[in-house]
Length: 512
Ligand SMILES: Nc1ncnc2c1ncn2[C@@H]1O[C@H](COP(=O)(O)OP(=O)(O)OP(=O)(O)O)[C@@H](O)[C@H]1O
Ligand SMILES: [Mg+2]
Image 1 (tube, rainbow, N blue to C red):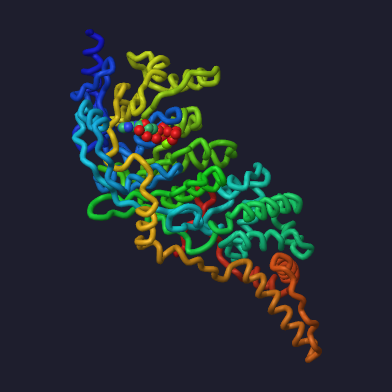
Image 2 (spheres, protein in one colour):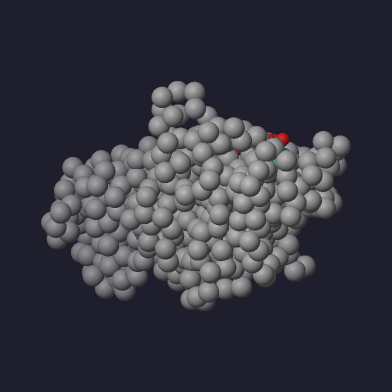
């Protein structure tokens, strides 16, 4: 009994910081909530990042939802991926039920139904949302390599290709631009340029080209191009509430790599654009990275280093990142070490692998009076083992917590509501229409045209041979091959332009 009192006292004191906080729930003692001992994260520490983990169906998404609601209410913008569509319910008031009210009453939560301002996005038009895109040049070689599944050698080769295109002023907006540049480098005429790019072999360039073609066939064409998503759009407020931007990903399994790299692009771009703010009363934006294991799986060393660096640096820009995944072991140690708050839902211990993951998870928690190996398998749904960063930056006591219930709908928003929200969004006019302005592909093609006209003029009135009408693909290749050999192209390539500044992940600085 004395020990029980100790837990209550320790948690009460450990979480008794002044100032606004994200309320997570109440301490559970022997299965009974203690409403005196509230478990919470200081709002000023939310940009010290966090992890929400647990087996499937244990309450991770609801935790994310209840946190996002409170952040929005505090005027903090939220970005989250909506992988199963169940987070879209955050835009609608929740449904009151006896069971729900029984839960909220025991933990001292005064529950009222509420919906929150939400914008829905989709990657290049997959899913219900305003379609968003990024250009190849701003995406950069590191992220693109991850998406294409390139190895280290191929990744550094792709870096050389970007460097070349940047220097030559060959703007890479969409996939066909990048293909045109690589085709140039692998053509007979481009070999001199290829040689100049020490370290890039024709064979590797060929591999990358084939990977790009496969990638386009999977529908990635729709994602790359303009208008490019203005990441400042995720920082909005509406009626004093932070806007919740949801990336709708109903077909995640089709393209997991594109999703996770896109989220890192977004973070890298925000990092470049946002001013340094140091310590903040509350974050500007909180970013929930669901299914985070997809990001780290099969990642190159360069990619993992970039993630760790981004997570480390973005905090001082007032952005908090919460990874959501099954176990902490999905997250590399140097990223995990930077996550100040931990909400660990139930873990299973059915298989030897489960047992190993459980043991590893326990080892990532600070010391406590709990036998975590036991407790983590006994947690109920919507319960978690929590430790966060207190207002002084020190870890709070480990607390078995029953979490609050979201005030918004705990199910997908009705399809009509979603469609109406998308149709009524101010972003629609901004992003829905694709723009295809002049870039590498068109420039190369134009040079072919110019070369042909010149030849025609030189031939002084001799009738030009009738041009056959090949398939688009063939035409593209032949035009590019013709153009690169022309002196006009070389002239153009030399005079073209300034170099692009590349930052985190090799993503390009925005040039608006
Ligand atoms: N905080 C909570 N309050 C009330 N009910 C909850 C809470 N957390 C979870 N639940 C209940 O448990 C169900 C599963 O939760 P949730 O969808 O968050 O699990 P999950 O860990 O995200 O699962 P998955 O890994 O399959 O995505 C919810 O539909 C809800 O009924
Ligand atoms: Mg979930």
